[in-house]
Length: 239
Ligand code: URA
Image (cartoon, rainbow, N blue to C red; front, side, top):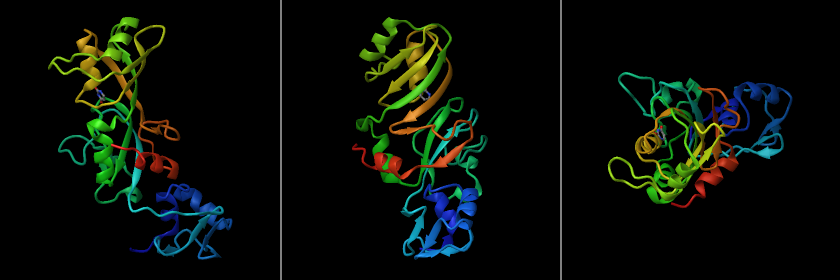
């Protein structure tokens, strides 16, 4: 394993941002093999050196996990001839070969996208039988009603005859906005569910993917590494 800068290690392991790392290292809060780290650009061997951050050992991981608050107009792909992709939004120090978005949001859907290089985990999380909850905030052209809530619960028959798995619909008093929770991710699923009810989605934002939320990344284009707790929660998800 190649050496890397100490501030990079603290960043990719989710301890703190690289800017914060500089300050914390200067204050003596980081040790490498028992000795207070000298500077942010000090080189460390992540799998061999013992790095302690504010009293807690830093765990280096083989895989990278990033959560992005996707803006409108960006595509969930690794490359695209025309549009910017979610990978184009990663700053240079977060880029790494093999990263890809785990699942897709439409170009005009905003919100939470998980980006990782752990193919096996992504495969497991996206498998139809895995039933990872995906939660969305939406606005619709016309108000929805309590009978639509029941329909969502029973399953909506899409234009191609597919019957969706039970989904939860929570309506605001106006009826034309609320939240939807799905346990599957068919192509354009929510738009097609609303079309099946002779309605139309006018705004869609994913706010949760399993245990992951937009905490700490409130603005479009914001991104951060997952915490150890979030990684453990994803990794313990059974397919
Ligand atoms: N359902 C949709 O229709 N679009 C998305 O991007 C996500 C869920």
